[in-house]
Image (tube, rainbow, N blue to C red; front, side, top):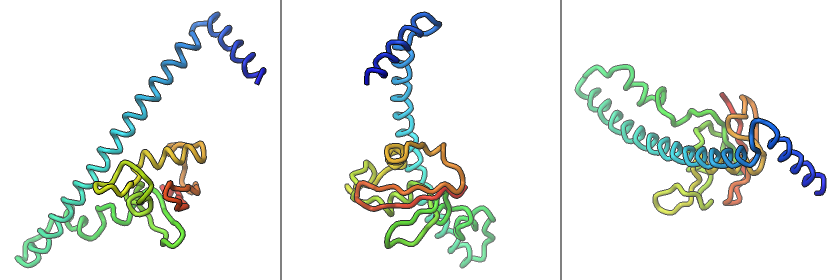
Length: 174
């Protein structure tokens, strides 16, 4: 501990003799970390809402495609893809997820959390299910493994214990 205190004093001395003040730098870094966390939370909310809206749009498209088939109306390719899974998010995502008793599935983080994290006390879930948002999941990864999402490359695999007690294996695919 004494080495840490001495080194900290040395850092303060060096920074005061240089171009920057260590306390000011650390304070600004702390402020920026707070802003980054707020923006990540906002981005998670936007992504969740976009996913909900895409699901609603897909329902309408599926009904319209069914009606178009009955009426023998040509369905543009972009809409046909939505009904066959080619353009939706149902079976795609950057990660493969597996947990005890659950078959491995390739999904986005948000979809996987709806499936795997119920009862975790997260902020998502319109009826108090306690589902983790993507940002909350990545916070757990940082706590448990010291890495951020952007640090992962294809093939990286992590074991993450969710607050509901479920141990999940997540593998970066792309």
